[in-house]
Image (cartoon, rainbow, N blue to C red; front, side, top):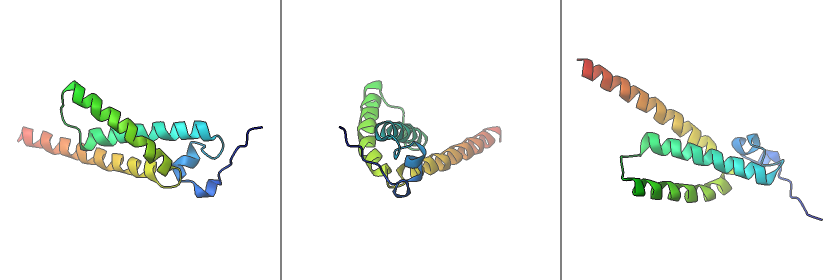
Length: 108
């Protein structure tokens, strides 16, 4: 018989508890990985992305996918996804204000 390890929900980060890592580890870890990948892509595009040739862009996204695997393991107990979420909000606000400022400069 398969031995299933249950995780204590109080030991998990808020996002890991939200996706249900403590109830179903495989599904929860997959959902946490997907969330971290999506948030990492958003943060990368909002803050750091430049126009690159397609091959370089593919390489960067492959490395991003690989780099999110250890972040997922850390994200079970540490607030990795939460930090990425806050970073995405801050960078989104920054980009929006930058857009408004550039629009005002073009009018003047």
